[in-house]
Length: 439
Ligand code: NDP
Image (cartoon, rainbow, N blue to C red; front, side, top):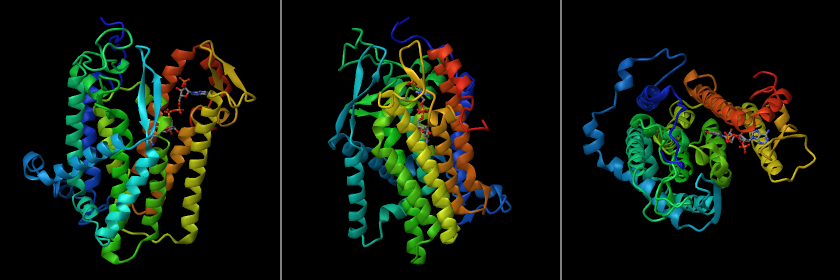
């Protein structure tokens, strides 16, 4: 067995059966959620008008998606492909990622500022050229669920491609850092089981020429499609009524701010679990390309079919909640990063045997993942503009709580293994995991 790529022995999601259930169940669930918010039918209250027949209305056979609607594929592949070309061509600062197991470091081009500028300019130009009609936004709004299905099929295809090429030895960048032709695989995605490895992602950093498929998919086509869907809802409402509704504008502004913040601060991602340790399989591809754009935009979709007038007082309260969450999220992440760079030597910390220190002061004395708490507060602020029309629009904080809890458990396992006694001492000093005094 290869020393560079040891076999996976620890399984998540209950192994391959769990991976299979999630791979089939989550796409169906995503389509289901979107089918409940359509211009011709949407859920009211506690699902008082739920009709099973409506869940299937407008859905088609495989042939329809794979053969008949080539325009949907042209639309989505143009989106994914043109963004990839623009991302590759635009200049940016080159940064190194974390050290890999073969002792090499991959280079990443950080060009979020340039890309965001071009993106905003293109939108503004299209608005001017089409006299505000923006047919691409109308197409997106009208074919919302069909495009969602296309992104699911595309995620299946992309993760299958990544799985297959993970077996092809290095052709161009060979040899690797240990002098062989092997690709660096993800520690968690090398079990030998096809379904499990395809789901988790076998290769750590699949690349297509200069394009890092994982980083690109995580930050560009999904995040920006989420923004486009929100815009398509605003645009639809404007075309239909000639007015803009304050709740929908607020959702667009708050989520737009969060999206651009993610795209502009992309270098922070290089050390995150997704890029540093996870492979690129169906789990991430589907999460990035379908789940993010098509479930994070449910509030905007709902407001486009059932608007709410918030008024200044409610608007101010919701904005304050978003600001508080964002302040906690950003300042906690910055404090940890500054501390790690040696900029905050006066803060209380625990020396670990590995040489690094664990911060046990400031935000990091409040809870072990106080940054998650800030992020979670933000998620509530995005739902409140829909007011209390239906619990459906509150899906996001519930899903996000599950995601953050799973992430916290994985991180805790990793830190316990990595830091041993020092982590136990940290847990003693900082007993709460996410929400201070609660959990
Ligand atoms: P963290 O930023 O909390 O990073 C955890 C890592 O930081 C640990 O593995 C450890 O790494 C180090 N660490 C933990 N505690 C300390 C400490 N006290 N002092 C110093 N170092 C410490 O987690 P994530 O990478 O999961 O998340 C980053 C951000 O991204 C969060 O704000 C999260 O909310 C957000 N996020 C958003 C998502 C979304 O869909 N919107 C999804 C996932 C995350 P080591 O010691 O090895 O360096």
